[in-house]
Length: 436
Image (cartoon, rainbow, N blue to C red; front, side, top):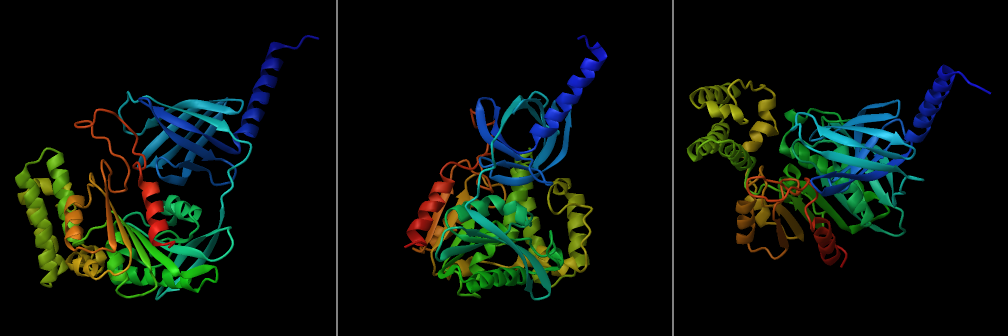
């Protein structure tokens, strides 16, 4: 029996569309490669919310956007610090294609391949969502609980200054939950589903939130009250010593990329480094650092927000390179936010709190950190001669303890993957200090 060509084509197109629609749902895993370097990759298309994950990149369940499927062509994008766009071809239960970085060099050759899995990997823990009160705000909380029986050690994870959502810490929560911990992550006040205004808050407000979360874990019947700890990244790590001066619940601390002295010194370091690395002189770098210290001095002396704003604006007019820093020329300081942590926090010093830590603590630093002076902080911590503080400095690691690639000094490209040895080192420390 003969079938007209147009009818046959219509049937094939219809069948192809149905196959794409049917096969695209599910869990897909594979890899992504560039210049001979490979990282893991998976996408979860089972639910209404679609997710991208890569353990190598320390990213789990990051939202996928712009998902399209048409005539066997598959496309989506995901924000990995920058937007990455994936374009692939569906062939049965395989997807192969290329990825491009939005705004990146046009000659980057990134390829990826995915295979549909029979089922999504089963996680060894459950996730409970709840809302808790912290003074005048409500915090949206997720608690990861291992399926193992008996009492579990527990840990509360604290944010950096700009990574303020629960979703930013899924990788870390997953890591500790797989080690047997009950883990609490939360949307920082004024972010995500938590109420309040972040920039009107003080460091004491953030510390109060951390203590409330510790108390929630302390009350859980499934938690070993003698094995509750705090993990902090960047700002959260900086605040750990002050937090434990106000509560005796934590029995151990893990600080990832902390600033030891003050947020002023962190800003002075990072902004001056940016100026020098972008071609500015060492003198310009020193001017940047001293400008931050001048702002701190003015705040400490009780100067008004108008006076600080005027200094910053005039300083940027005199030194145009200041416009590449956080003290840029067209800055407008909000009167109310001037009383919050971003400005008033500059006059707080933390070294004395580090001196008084008397519980086990692990400090993790990267020697290519662009936000805190890891070498200086390492030196200060060692000078304290605290036997209970263990310091690990990872070569070639950035602020997030991912591997960095600097084409001016590195001969071989690699992805910004989790720095080698990080996971094993933390696990070993936990087993020696927490589980004993």
